[in-house]
Length: 288
Figure 1 (spheres, rainbow, N blue to C red):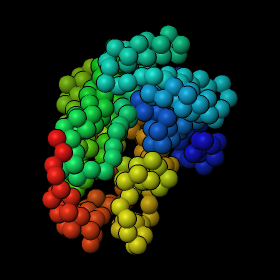
Figure 2: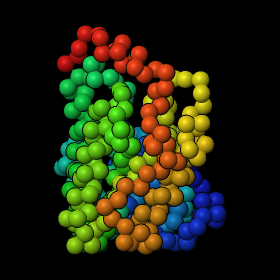
Figure 3: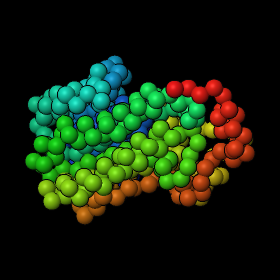
Figure 4: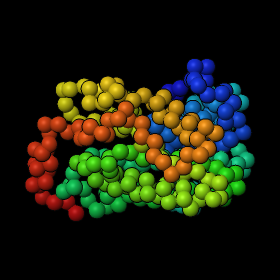
């Protein structure tokens, strides 16, 4: 089910046809965050290709996004593993064959779960690094010719988990730190070719898969721990995404747009669970 609708266009600060003639290529496009990013771009005139591993879920999401704007085309390309660069090359070719071009790339495929270091196997750590970091690299690699040809823009979906020590998220923090470094390097290396590269780092966004899966238990409402005193909305991510792809950001590259209401400045959310929870987990039998 789509998060946005035509009211996003009518009530937004953006021109209705801002992205007319543009095409966005999105990995993880059926997930909550990347889906709302795609919805916003399509509502404002773009066509899109969303990629995912689950073919049925990806095609269903594509059809629902396409229905948001009459005349739009949204491809749902399933059975795509971002760890396989050749699969991404094939998806990029299909996108160009059917939609004519690729202007924008959102690298958003990700894997996450809660695990302390002691119970996090080497294979589990490798899996997250491969999906998040290698997958992001592969996504840009597969679309590079189109980005170079069209002087396009890249947006990596990052996080704030590596800005300070976050227990149970060492695997994701390491992967996202790598993504930030990759984006910065590409901004410098690809900038002379006319390609911009940025990251978006969502915080606690209400109604997302990440919030449902990763929210720590506790009685205090999470919004009280956010300086702006509310949880983020998926629309907040949509607005930031539109800005970073819009002409308004044509001189913005090599930056990380944090969308978290200043929450990361407060520090961890474990509260009274720390250090008891990590001590308990750390004293168990190690998992290799």
